[in-house]
Length: 194
Image (cartoon, rainbow, N blue to C red; front, side, top):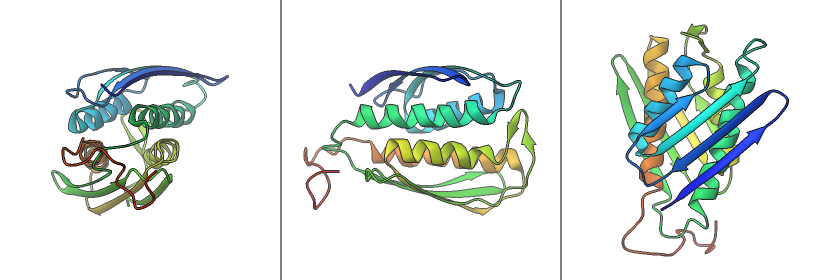
């Protein structure tokens, strides 16, 4: 099983996680940011990733450090769990609706971290989560995981629905990309490595 346990401790955050890419979408997440916990749970549920994550951060200062550092560590965990990436589908895409919102996501496990973010979401908070932190989280995640990640909001008005469509869409696309391909055990690349 592609499973990894990692931790990251800085002067601003202390994070521990256990990730299983071949799971059932079961989670135990405690970041101190309720809506963020809900979004990480949604991502994992639709990617069939099991995740245990505990984060303690300087929330009295801001939520930025905790959210970004979770993205860094989760990205590192994905990269380590995938190993040499042999035998995986490598790419995945999703068109994900959430009521009036529709998000389009494409991912390539390319070993080249890049985020294209075209999500026009109204500024503000969703619960205790600053909307602009979604982009920061996915940038940290994509760069540290070595993903080329494109996220496009086709349309939507409600901040909660927009972000939920995005997180679920990323989970669905990632779940497809990390799937084992039963026709090859090689790395899906003309270079032979990623």
